[in-house]
Image (cartoon, rainbow, N blue to C red):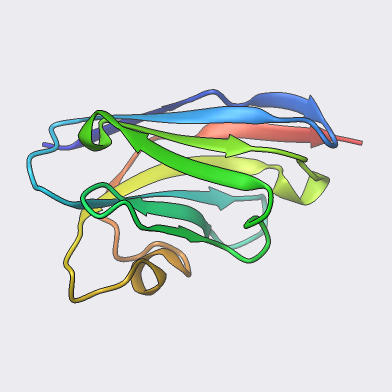
Length: 131
């Protein structure tokens, strides 16, 4: 059974940075899509960044592509999201999610949107941004 635990959230001022970490256990397949999604109060969950642990390909939402960086190590057992130049609109609960990844799909296919194709989720970590 795949399990995910997020850490690294917190409160920062606008322009600040954080490093979010997703620690995964139970991975057995050779390629997973592991993504970071976020949900702010009153808003739909949205995909922020994803990585393929087998291919190393990455996906970023347009709103974060120049500020966030996703990386994977230990064959996907550790996925980090470095979030820079945080804005008030970035405040949300950030969730890590995983699914086995098929080469017949692209990261855009599975990571854009609400993450409905992901079957394993962590409990989330809160990111707060003050002005």
